[in-house]
Length: 475
Ligand code: GLU
Image (cartoon, rainbow, N blue to C red; front, side, top):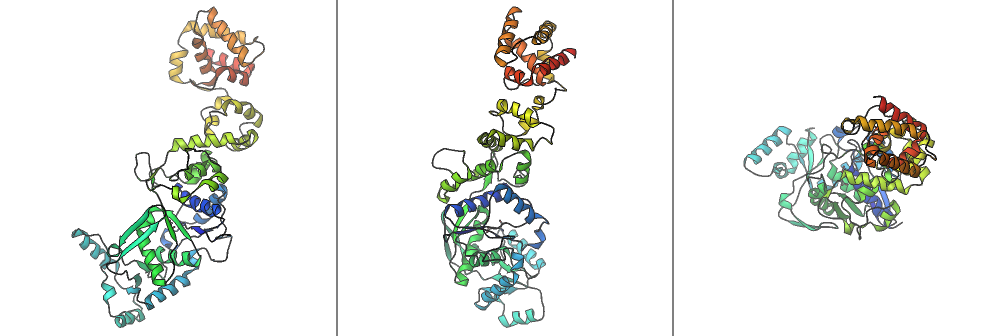
């Protein structure tokens, strides 16, 4: 194993979403490419946001995706425990260390006081920040208040007037002025650490070499870098991934379509297609290639080729990619996969007959079992616009009736013979072939669009075709 150690550090506040999946994936690819270690760490220090079952769900989804971690909850490892709420004593001890070196101080301000401070700063057009009033308190007085049991938090003492240069693999050198960095709370009054403290302590003790995470954490990075400095530790390498955007370039959020991975799974997106798609949300391969297997991604991926600019999430592309990956499966594997979406209502044999016809056009199981249910059952209704257009002319309906009758005798009942027969029939009635093809399609499928009519007729078989034509003619 190399020294590369990366982590995916979700907070268990709900389902795994695309943004989280991308972070997990890039860490995974980076670890595998470098023969390193991929750690899963649960950041559950905000007890108010904790959601029951979120960790179990996460583990299940990661397993479905095949993003196997090397160390983490339920798996163990040398640097555990991997759940922050099981490491509380460690965080408290490190606040004591910072307090001892003057890098942390107790703050007794009530939430009412802090609210007033914020409102006042906003009224004066300033960015709200803690005004550091407790930092100036006499240490003996502060100790007396702590000893008296007064509720308090611990804040980090951010140095004044310093410029911090953070070099980020994706964003290059980013400058921060410490005067814009808040005296962050490190330990809350309930004795739980904040994300910032726990994150830094854990990344250090878990020997994390590279922190790969979403851009929303970039503004927190100066706090983290200062904490590393206070403790005398070396900071990891940082790589902040670009935002995910909607098609209109607005920030993607759970509200605006950042759908839980679970939902894609239910729709019939293959894990390998989702991984391929998510890999391209921000990363660009050297050529314009788009379809990759996971081993190919492990080989090709590089943080250097991740963009700074936001990545646009395009649902149509995900569906297209799913079709590509479905076609990469063996036919039998594709059938196995698709059959999961039929609730047992479709037999494997029937599906096997349909598959060659649909293989080139399928994107999702619903392409077969949703709109195209006619493969498996007679249509119960007909597209109304199609009816108005193709079933309206009595003369044509008469020809169609003759057609139904002749179909009982066409031999062999295969696509080529059926096509030649229909064209000859149309000619005899001095009609264009389309005049018969469209109403036939509508009668057989209830739809105005379908795969090639004659291939479909061959697949449905004589009895079904004749029965469906008769049914349509009876309307
Ligand atoms: N717990 C943070 C999250 O939920 C992790 C951020 C980080 O990777 O440092 O995104």
